[in-house]
Image (cartoon, rainbow, N blue to C red; front, top):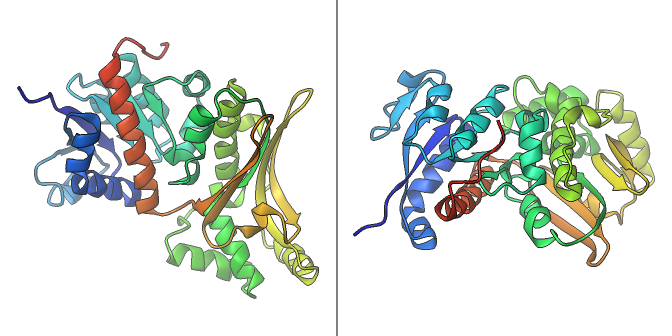
Amino acid sequence: MAPPVLRVGLIGNGTVGAAFASALSANQERVTQRIGRPLRLTQVVVRDPDRHRRALPSIRVHDDPEGLANDPSIDVIVEASGAPDAARWLRRAMERGAAAVSANKLAIATDPLLLAAIARRHPLFHCEAAVAAALPIVRALRDSLDGEEILALRGVLNGTTTFMLTEIEAGAGFDQALNAARRHGYAEADASADLTGRDAAAKLAILATLAWRAPVTLSDVPTRGIDPDVIHLVQTARALGQRVRLVAEATRSTGLQLCVEPQVLASNDALARAEGVVNVVEVQSALAGSLTWYGAGAGGTRTASALLGDLLAAARALAGSRADRIAA
């Protein structure tokens, strides 16, 4: 008898969602081999279903995320919408025993229940794609370093501002750099979450929650972003052989100190290697010492890679047990 199909529901079919759907389809045989049963995308939720139905001919396309979250036929929800209400849909899916995967860092970092699930390594909730696209820092903290004492972590986590600062280093003005980021698809029309530092702060909240096993919310992170005045700081730093980057930092000694702010970095600082949309994360741990991750932290296909990896992890956990559900 053939193993039962695991049915997947996708919320959002924009750049990231469409890349995920394409990656799942292209890797169907590999995915089946790795988890021992097929995974099939059966529903997609979007704001305007008529625009997407032709591209998804064999899939039910509709505009009811609540209905998808409550649908008992859906085993795994993959959320790639960026919607502020996404936390409610993710929680509802997990309450009924489904697995949930999300790339929505702002929704996660403002929801205490989802953060609590992350802190206790809930097997049915995965969010690698919410922090640094394909850079495997969430899985490293969740699994590889789970037995470690984490002393500090810091990173360049926002590709939009790193791209802009790289452009400004090359002589561009602030608005020129922002427009270039939009042309390349690295910044939305409303780039306020990137420019204010909220995007990086949400990612830091998730990483700190993982590192110290207690919920850290977006509101816990003092945040200062970048504005046109950063040009003078970039020019001064460049004259001294230094670089300016928007740095997210967390340290723990007597308590937990967190911040996101533009910092001047020495040329030999690991974080100074960040250019374009590259993310860099550095973790200080008691046993392993200093560890650094480096790689592209933005882009549809890269984020889809993280979503696909999380989907497999969630599917394996789901196959093991449906009993571990999120608290209501």
